[in-house]
Length: 494
Ligand code: NAP
Image 1 (cartoon, rainbow, N blue to C red):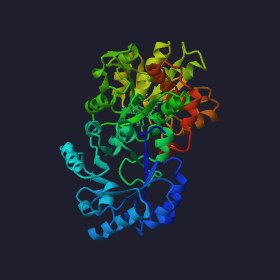
Image 2 (tube, rainbow, N blue to C red; image 1 turned 180 degrees about the horizontal axis):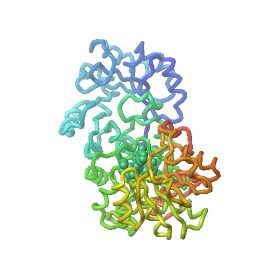
Image 3 (cartoon, rainbow, N blue to C red; image 1 turned 90 degrees about the vertical axis):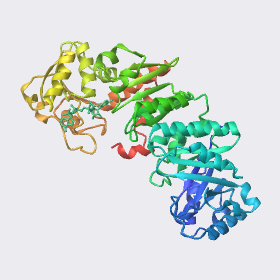
């Protein structure tokens, strides 16, 4: 682990024995532990201090400070004094709490913290200046990010504090604060907070320590780490962080891939000015909107009218679309496409990329959608035929492509096409969660050649990786990461 890149795991157990067990389990991943003593049935610090495998913070938040402690201020001060005497390395007190009543010894091992669970206040610097007056060794400021502008201001604050020579653990909470949690230590924060496991988060947006260590490799991020990520909303269950981070790790590249959940593209680019990202994937709902913000477009993105990949080169934003290439590669590996007849179900972004790639390769394309008007628009623009979904049985085809979400988790018992139409066909389901959909099962059962959306997902990611790095991606490592059971979002991957 690099100096300055440190992970503090927050423990929210109800009894000391369980907290000690968690410390032992996680001591190879955590650099320090924060004991949320207000979660303990008995907040006595002594049993925990006696068994500490790493430095410890003793935190006792009141009701109304996001905590559970209901005792008086005097009770708190007495417990803080006991914690220090027992061997805790730090005590954490809210900025409006009576830290002035602490002994001189207590003040030297003090974290003074400010939380705002609703917003990132406009006078963030004012709060920092006020906390800076305290004798605290570490100042902690944790505020809710309601926009990536808020996360950008947290990075500004970290910059300011490192200029002042103060240790500031500043972070933004919520899904839009994720980048501050992952990049904070590389931008001057003395440490970043992580959850012991999914479901035990002490604050919104806290990332499980295993993800911090294995997925984001927070300990090895420094200022020269190349930053990539995903622009979208929502991003929490995207599989892209897994595959790209696995590729960087496999090739031992100093790079990280982060979900940037954002309320607007303007706030995303404002944040990116602070962190200096090198490339991004783009997902729903920004693939079309981002086109006009590009300084240049590659011809495929221009023709499809959507960007799913951005590379930043010499401060210019170049837009690409790897969905079409990602879609067609698994097909080209198996069959010669020219002259085939394909039916594409759906008329959204994935259908457009699929139809475009097929038409370019001399395939006759029929787009069928429940919304005929949308199918017509798509087909007219590209030179395909169109119709309603209910027409499927009336057409003969070689290739069936599902570009609707029908059959996707949790609706895994649905299929967009009757099994009796699938015999002898090539059936390609762009849905990748689950990897084997009902449509694909029935296709195999009917003797069809079945192709999973997983293949498209991996190929479009591999194409992004090539664009960003100029390096051939380690596809096997990427595939393995997709199915790794350990990460948080695996709960969603059935
Ligand atoms: P999209 O732009 O929202 O388009 C979805 C299309 O499906 C629309 O035409 C929509 O019709 C139609 N649709 C939605 N629900 C339907 C239903 N219950 N019955 C019939 N038609 C329905 O979404 P997208 O980005 O194209 O994605 C479509 C699917 O492809 C998703 O499952 C996505 O996960 C998958 N995908 C996979 C990859 C990959 O790498 N494998 C890449 C991109 C997308 P309306 O216009 O009437 O709503």
